[in-house]
Image 1 (tube, rainbow, N blue to C red):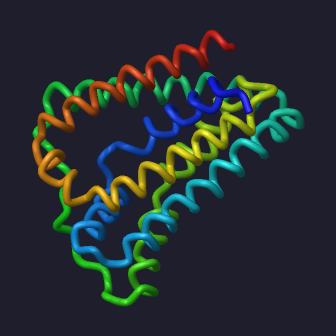
Image 2 (image 1 turned 180 degrees about the horizontal axis):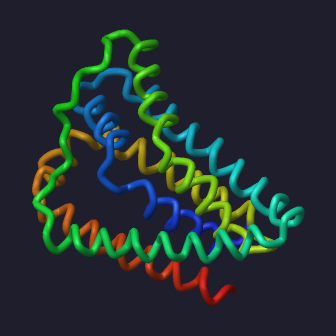
Length: 203
């Protein structure tokens, strides 16, 4: 496994999943109340792993059948990432948001909790753009390292969700401060712009 490609996949994967959103808020909330934390974290991470694997393994094959797809998605993905980075930078400068954890409670039972988690994850259209399209497109830049790239992105997802769920009691006061999210959003802007530039110029 190529270490640099693995780390690139991990960094890119993390940059796409750490943004404020319903899924992260749900995981954080379950961590705060200490209910079904491992099951929820694994559900989110395994869902990401499935979608990342589909993107990395299938996108290259689709590009072989339809050669115009790869450049179209590469430049389209770069345009999206430039826009995404700009929004993150604007948020870093102007936003006063913090991560909200006061969403309606999921049911106490494991089945109802996981059903809520799956709905939040799989009914979000952005998850498909982030994992299947963007990560699938970026992985084509590593012709001999796509497995390492996917492994890095999947590892980053597992690490992030487990850290968020089990580190919730420590993370809550930190990310309750808007300034913490401004720093995070600024960092995300720089990372995704670098990724977008790589997509435009190619490897």
